[in-house]
Amino acid sequence: MKPIKLLAIATLFSTSSIYAATLTTKVTSKLEWTEEGAYFSSSKGDISIYTVGISSKQFQSLNSLKKGDCVLITAKDSKLTKQQGTISIMEFQSAKKVACK
Image (cartoon, rainbow, N blue to C red; front, side):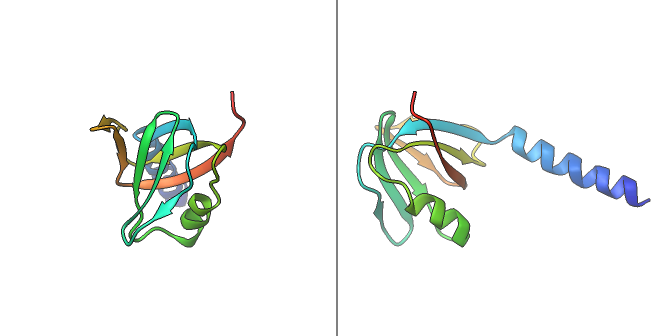
């Protein structure tokens, strides 16, 4: 019975990441914070991230971003689309610095 539970949990985690959206971009402005979000400009347009309820680890990954950093942003949103020049991320998961290409 225990192996079946472990398999079910592993399946749940693997399928939840299938629907995650990712975006790799270069930060072109200083990160700005408001009560509900973080905002910055990037090589792919302005990015708005809803941050209410994020963990301290998620906060640290965002707060470490500096102008000139290349970053891989992962979100639970099914896709990240630009509307009126801004990419809005409602279900932020992580921001990881990556090598610029």
